[in-house]
Length: 85
Image 1 (tube, rainbow, N blue to C red):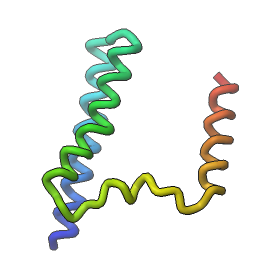
Image 2: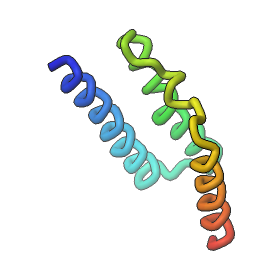
Image 3: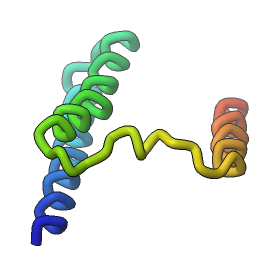
C-alpha cells in the first residue's frame, strides 16, 4: 500500500506542476528567462523537496547513466527537434 501512495504523491506533483505551468504560460505570459526559472523550480525543485520528505526515494538513481546508447538516442532526437524548428 505504501508504494501505491508514493506513486500517487509523485503523480500529483507532476499533474500540479503541469497545470501550474499551463497557467503561467497562458495567463501570466512571462519573458523567457522567468519562464525557465519557473520550469526549473516546478520540475526540479519540487521533486527534490519530495525526496527530502520521503527517505525511501533515491534521487541520484534517476540520473545514473546505465546505457550510453540511450544517451545517444536522446541527443539525436533533441538535435533533430532543434533543426526542425
